[in-house]
Image 1 (cartoon, one colour):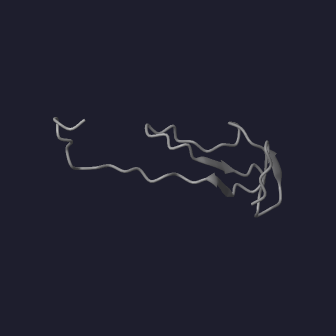
Image 2 (tube, helix red, strand yellow):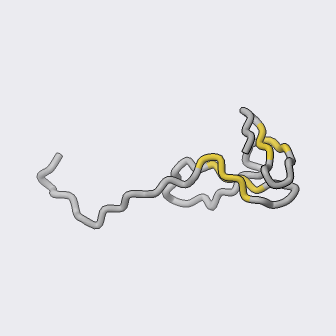
Image 3 (cartoon, one colour):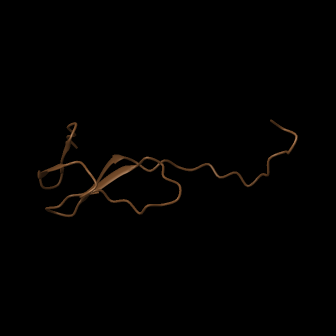
Length: 67
């Protein structure tokens, strides 16, 4: 997918639109991973610029004596 500093071009339909909150898909999750996902305003295709990072949730408790 072609990416410019302030614009995205949709691979599916070729529509060029501005990067920004207007077309950004964000669920405002509590573990913001810095992903950058948009939906094309013309064809509604999902465009992933920065994928969601996998979170490392350890089920092992930390040792209180460890710094």
